[in-house]
Length: 585
Image (cartoon, rainbow, N blue to C red):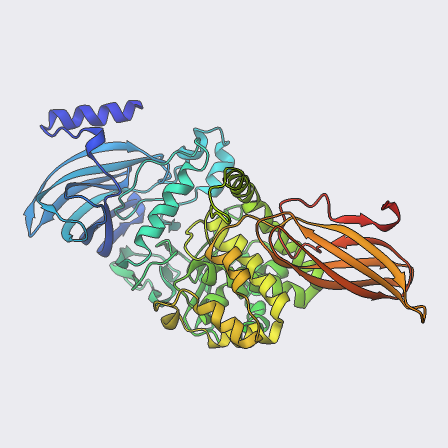
């Protein structure tokens, strides 16, 4: 046990409350409702919060103890049930889910045991400071100068920006410890937390008093909660309403600065005076991006906000329809794809992460294709491949082992897109899935499906709602594809040319018969290009998992080479994708 863990246990003993490690299930309770009022004092970097939270027992057992956690730079002040104080012990708890690398944990003893699926409401109060802190990164060896560009969260008079759980626990959470130095520990804990609170309601009124200065100040939370006030007196107040009926994948975030306003509602754009040219690049990107998104997904309607960083090296961050990105640079391509991404969220809300985020990343690639051609889009898409390749290799290895042991004919493993809360899957892999679907059914059919998509209908019982929309538009059975790529995680395909047979007809027409094999556990429709004397020709072929498929192609001349896959289908092995026809025996 780490040193702080021992100190926490000793503190608990002296308070007369013994909490055996094996007795406390830190993820037994899910916080299903937040209703908070948060006051900021930037000059002191302080945050104070009061409000109510509702916890539901999601374990299968009676529970009387709950572990509530906030950032280690904050302190618990009060916890009540039915307006009466309850017994709790506050202790440090090491976890990299917070930027400080630790949490302030209150182990609460409830007045009564809570039955499975029953809930309890707590009135809470806590306060403290949120300074810039990169401890969780520097202690694993990241240089401080680099770490602070990723861990930029802080309350500060000139620039305030604070992200939620996974970065800063400025609101209560209930999680097990996460460790950056132990593989995927941090990401697994964050993914579980997001999955648990995806359906939770979150309301927080963020208030900053005593606003002074010559320039207007802006407080940004959710784009629908923008509030601004001109500093005309000594006791002005800026506030923002953070409100989500359903959190989904959103990380509650707030920011405040002396921004310049370049907004065109419902598109809100806030920049620093020194970044005027970069901000103009974003502003100029709006109209073409709006036209593109409207054609694909319908007109954007919900507010979208893009806010600048004081530090131009800060890593960008997105949550819902709020994007924080530096406008110090004047990259028109990046500005265009960023604006497209946020407008897609506005035009097509969804409670399904693989739809909500996957379509937004797919749209970035389609927009890049419109600007620079298919290869430019595939280059952008290729940046996502590494994010999930290693995970999918592990899935494929597990599938092979299960098959060798005759566990089941078509075992499942990994993280199905339909249910995952892992960002590498619902962002990166999902982007590929939408691209493959577009290649298979065509732009018009996919546009028809996305225009008909309704989030409220997708929330109903039918888990195949998206599949049925696309099948109806394309008039094609896609059940095999959705089973391999969405409902299950079968790993990745692995294509290669098994054999070719060039021949000529009686009229001298050059024909080639190509047999393609898929060594992987996921099927796909893959493009292949035949290089020949008269040029080249590209065709597509559907090859199911662990299967072969054969097709004939008429050629303009003698073939010399076949190249499988142009990068539009993620594969586990790309080393076997070129087939030299003259080299075959």
